[in-house]
Structure formats: C-alpha cells, structure tokens
Amino acid sequence: MDAGRLRHLIRRGDLAPCFDAAEDAVDGQAEECPICFYFYPSLNRSKCCSKRICTECFLQLMPSKTSKAVQYPVSRLI
Image 1 (tube, rainbow, N blue to C red):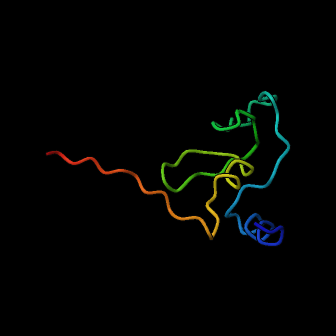
Image 2 (image 1 turned 90 degrees about the horizontal axis):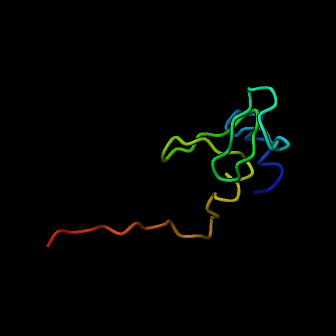
Image 3 (image 1 turned 45 degrees about the horizontal axis):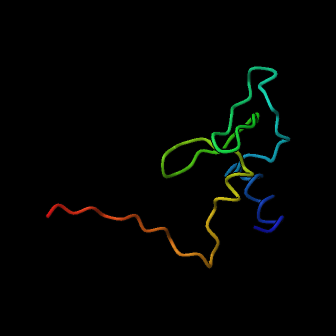
C-alpha cells in the first residue's frame, strides 16, 4: 500500500495510526496485538472475526490486488 493511501485511511479513521511498538503495557491503556505480541495504544478490528491487530500486522496480512482469495476446504458427509 502506498504512503498516500495509508495516510488517507488513517485520517478517515478506517485504520489505526502507526505507533511505535512497546514490549509491555506501561500505562495500562495499551492493547497487545495477538500476532506480533507488541503493545499499542490503538488497534484495528478485523472484519472476519472481530479480533484486534496492529496496523503493521494488518498491512502484512492484507491481500494484494493480484493475490487470489483463500478458499477453505468444505467437508462433506458421505
């Protein structure tokens, strides 16, 4: 994602700002990202499962325009 689009999403409130990671919650207000295990003052909420993740992890997990959607296997009873 380019810097201009990232800045636009943050200003609109669609994406949490990029904060410096902390190794522990100093003020008790920080939340832990379940992927990188760093603490941030603000996290994003995923649409699929409502889990909260930091912006850095979100950007790394976000599918690119050229990638195909992940297909989950469907189990069928025989």
